[in-house]
Image (cartoon, rainbow over all chains, first blue to last red; front, side):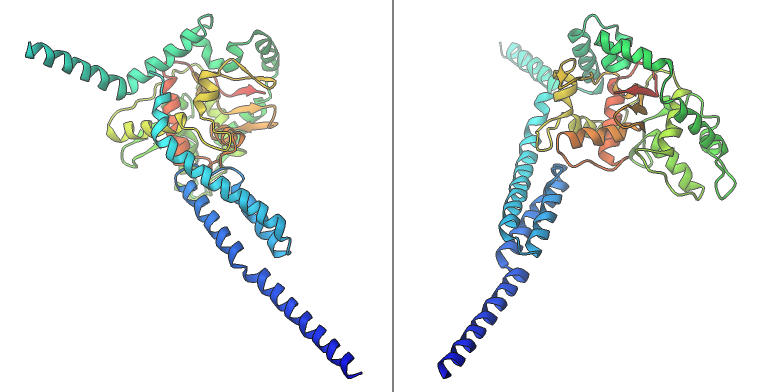
Amino acid sequence: MTISIFSTLKLFIFGLCVFALNATANSTNPDFNTIWLEADSFRKEAGIQGHEWRDTAKILLRARKEFKVSNNEKAFVLLSKARAESIAALAQAARERKSWERRVIK
Amino acid sequence: MKKLVFLIASLALALYGTILFAGPEVEQAAFKAYFHNKFPDVDKADFINGVYALDKNAREQWVEIEEFPPYEIAIDEGELLFNNTRFTDGKSYGHCFGTGQHLRKKYPYFDEERAQVITVELAINDCREKHGAKPLKYKIGDLAKISAYLSYHSRGDVIDVIVSGSAAIQAYNKGKEYYYTKRGQLNFACVDCHVSSAGKRLRTEILSPSLGHVSHFPVYRLKWGSIGTLHRRFSGCNSQVRAKSQPGQSEDYRNLEFFLSYMSNDLKFNGPGVRR
């Protein structure tokens, strides 16, 4: 009987720990937030240079929404896509600063 | 011998400089020559009709649409808005623009005092704000209708944009840079579709040449089902190549309009137009 009470208590404490860890992970997952902020800063920088792509901001918002409802796998896929778009947009801006003049009709 | 080498070097440098830093006039001549050579059968004045100058079948359909043009209602509504609007101070558009006849040929121009390009749509909203009214949306609706009315009464006037002074040249150069710069996920510049691919098919549509592009705006697009301004079209182009589009009358779009209008100098205004 004693063993059974201890087992139930252990199970309850374990459950509490898992819940607490999960809740912490969802609200302040450092990886997601750090990557999200980084991707957003790249997007903003591309925007300042006139090269932001059409859907990057929307993808970032969708990633945030998915993460809020604990759909982490999808959230990270979207985040990765948005980050890649932002980096590619910045690369495009750098490349175009040097190459646009070659297209001028002379 | 030294003199000869110096002379040749100077000439080469001058030639290189001319090619590299060709001014607006030289660039305009090259731009026009490109299209005249690419489409030798098209009458030079016919470039104002865009894709309908290039394709016989599309032209036939367009001519039929023009018999009962869908932009006609917009002109009428624009006329009412232009003539009947009274601002809170009792003034009207007439106080800013007179009768509104032959107005479009004055735009776009570079305003030295404000150090920016002024387009007709910007001037309309400037007028409203000056007289205490709220600005209108730049790409659609009442502003496009007023613009259509003004365009209609400028038909036949010659595009005559002046690029003079360092600040104006700077605005022109910014417009030029925007035109030739690739952007968006699809990595396209304006020049990719409307110069090198002009006359070719993109899915079901034939791409129009840039020369004469600005002459027929605002346009009633069958795709839109309404009349829209040139900046609405710019915005659509940006979006189609998956670049973030800009708000109407952004500095970039006004500089682009300035550049494109200068490229089409000597052609005639024939707006508003109808396009698919």
